[in-house]
Length: 210
Image (cartoon, rainbow, N blue to C red; front, side, top):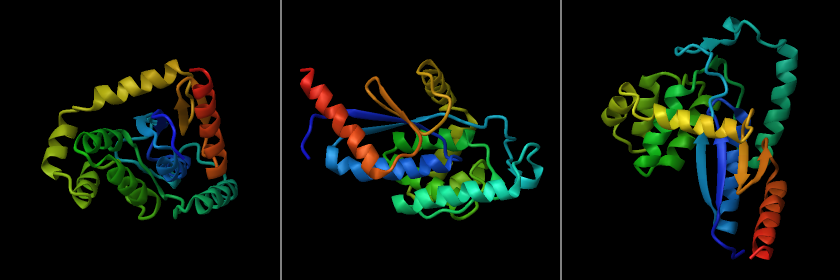
């Protein structure tokens, strides 16, 4: 489909399984619609300790049976989107990962780094809140680990993460993934068909308003 150029914004967090699914879905649709995808940070659990915590350590962890049911649903959505994942056993604080993603985007590796971080967390069970782990993931996609270390230690990208969070709050975002096409918004991981229809409608309305 040939259409006008436009931007799709996505607020997301690496510890959100629905964000992994949602990102895979919109990337599938990029070649069809030719939109620019702008990923913005929205940390959903800043209260989790920097070193992360196990499920057993979580003070308000849900009943194991309820968690299994939720993850059965998540895995069904993931399978439909072509994403392989499993429930993480470590709850990671994503602050440094979100900053590292900004470093990756600035160095032309945003897409590959995002995928690598999600895969590390939801497939390999790695604690993506640790700087050492992020350095290894950065090296995996061809980024300079020493430069990333310096960026994280200096908090170079912390202001950008805060600006994204403030923008999200101004737009009424309380959960992720949250997608914005201009002033149109959509929350939650959607099926490929649903997301395609939403984008088609947006393009049609925008064209009609010209």
